[in-house]
Image 1 (cartoon, one colour):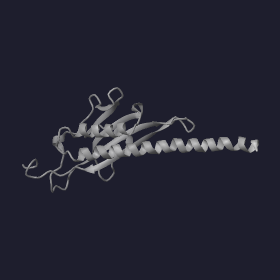
Image 2: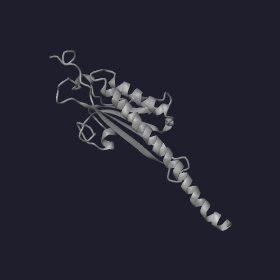
Image 3: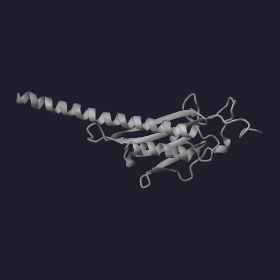
Length: 184
């Protein structure tokens, strides 16, 4: 009986730790997805508003912080002009690396551990609010994308040190009344 227990205990422990590690990773993944959607909702609801990108960053940081994601695991946020067909950059590629290295039509943020907020990357490119196409009835309305990356660390390191969790959400900018902002 002791021999069977000695053989089974490591297998059961590995199984138990696997459930724990991957359950926590799944929870973190859902949180990153929720934060990305929250940021995109805020940015999409604020077309032609000079604070759209910082408001989106505040929404993402609030969701990540309230869900208990450790501050040292939060990495990157990008608010960008999106291609609705690919979810990538309208002016570039659709890979995660292309979004993180965007050079036009985006705002890049990095996480500040001390203040627990996203701060704009020094000298980072921008997508000016004045250039957003968000007129009611227009067929070429812009889409905003929000990309979030969090490096989830495993507790036990049995399955490695961790994994990178990324999520992006693309939403159409809410149209503005033609008479208010879009009049010639």
